[in-house]
Length: 325
Image 1 (cartoon, rainbow, N blue to C red):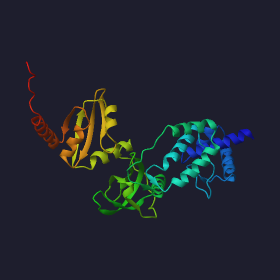
Image 2: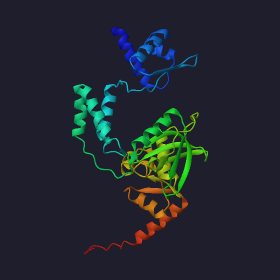
Image 3: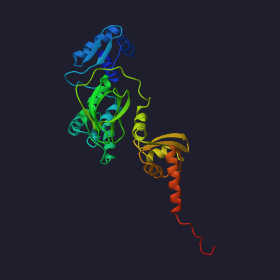
Image 4: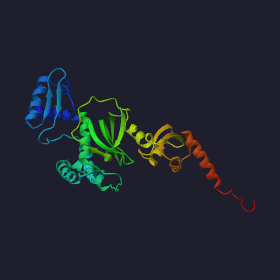
């Protein structure tokens, strides 16, 4: 009986890790035959876990949604991560989840082993949250978009641009990306037949969701880097590429993912790309980094920085020799 119970817990853990499993894959992971997997799935269903199955050679199992929330299995690191996330949710960029976060945290801490509670409490005691000034996103909007990403369902929504222009969009959602202050949706815009980056706080969902779609290859393997490029560089008239004569790990501490893309060249220099609709704004941004830099493109920025350097040099009076020299 103990061996069977341990196997059921292991099966439940596997079903929570991945969306779809074949019976053969589960049997191989558990070290049993496919018939035993079927019996164990029936036992989980009897305990209230909604396990969906599809017959045939291409069939398999997935943990579905039921009428009630069943217990979840979390390892130590996952439990601590959830507790820390719930503690900080009230001060984050998602609104409407403060009270529910407190309730969920109380339930989690109640069943946590003392060693894990000490880790969570130590982090909370040593942390002071600074109030943010980024836009707030409704929790139900985030969860609806995340569900559409997972189920590969089209989204229909109204979108407001930076200039206040309103439009209707039909998109195949791929991933949500969080920059630290803003949420972005990376999606395939069906009308424009291209990948787009949408700020979630400017999205107004128009339910119900559209039909399911076959996922496309993402615009780049590292979706976060692509989103950073689109926000920091791709949307602007002038797109700068320059060499900063300082290590990349230092330069990134003076930028944000929404203001620049930094890539190392070697241990002493890096490539920085940034965008702006103003040449003055770009030049000022680069100068305030506090490092020596060389501008490569665009040509307009190269000429603008050269002219600005001449004006600044002329603004400094020539040094006078010291008395007695």
